[in-house]
Length: 157
Image 1 (cartoon, rainbow, N blue to C red):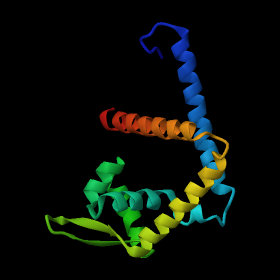
Image 2: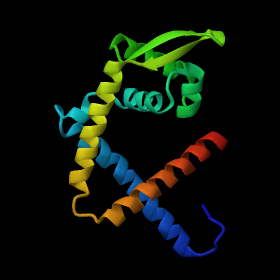
Image 3: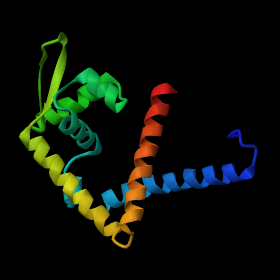
Image 4: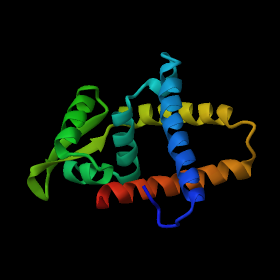
């Protein structure tokens, strides 16, 4: 794959990024599995992401949730059904679309999401304890930019 720069430096940098992202995903999963009783495991990843979206954006139509999270509507519907069984969300008919469903986080769902979020912040605080505030801020900024670029790429192909 070429990047248009015509030099090897870009390929080396992209190779490092690719390797580091692969390590990040592996280590993220390993840290999640390494503490079976940890509070940050109180929700599965899908439920956590859906609850974060509902906490940030309020009640949403299943189609809007699917679009925002870049997932198929049937996937969101299955995940929401499981979350409803667990008391994490409620579903009501969409007043704007009789075929649609509006999903709302319950108080229990928001409490559990906040509990997981606090546990994760505490974990990352320990992991990054020897980083300067400036380095942590830079990491946050760059991760946000990376996620925006990944989101744009997945939406635009």
